[in-house]
Image (tube, rainbow, N blue to C red; front, side):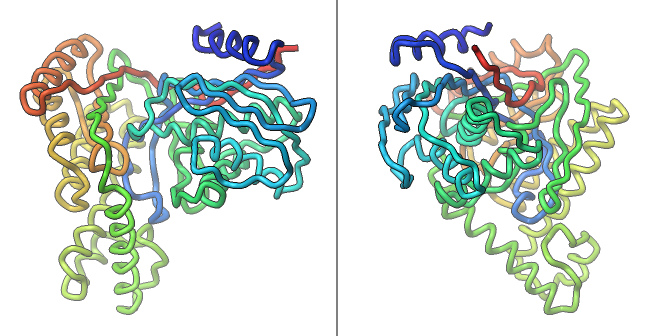
Length: 387
């Protein structure tokens, strides 16, 4: 049993004086390519990382909710039927309960201890991992028979409707459905998905956390969405039969250059070309062409930097330093931007050199070191009954 799992089990025993009935966990994720395409009904290509959120729990005898965190979050205890937002971490698990109840599942309260190794606020989606881990705990406690595609949609509904965060579906899908040694090609319009083998063969994925808090992300994220929607409206008025940027081709975009404001055109160009890069990336990996995949990863960052304008000095330094290391095939920012992480595909024997040079460059420029973690594609959520 993993060390983290044992820690959660021991903490539950101390807190509640008995063993839990179910142990569940769900991973964080990194998006390999396909950024800001999700809310434009496009394609994304994430993988699960080797950081998880663990939860041990049992049904409560009196119907109360008693939730504890080993990550320094405040404890929560609640008696009652109606669930309301608390503006704290417990909204994510409570949101899952709320959605399941709305769907007709009769769930009572439960006692649980959570522990996570997914860095909070780094862009590796600790929130989705928390939701998905909770759902799998509840599946174990109440014997819920949920179809695979239904599971991430429940968690997504919890975040958008209960927590109130307007997010795409990618994070919940990869956390719930990831397979070891695979990445997930997800169609954000249809929710169809495909497990794509990710044969790294001596290479690995390095995630570098800039530790820069993404202070601009909310306002700028909303602005980018509005600019994309404006581009679609202009193309529709011009007679194009499109519903979202997913339907737009580069040729179509270029034929309406005069109609599109310069900034809107750049935003649209990123999304259109990024969708193409995702699909081409999958084909490259099917051929075993990791070099071509790396080239597309590099192109993605350049497009995010210059067309979508969501990069920052810290992320650019991480990417530029990585690209200068022999053995790196591609590097880009991952997530919404303005901070957070980069993702780099690198030969395993070059990880030490990448780490050294990245930390030196960052320390020289910013006075502190980023956190780097290495991962291979990991499995998604799971639970086990302990009776």
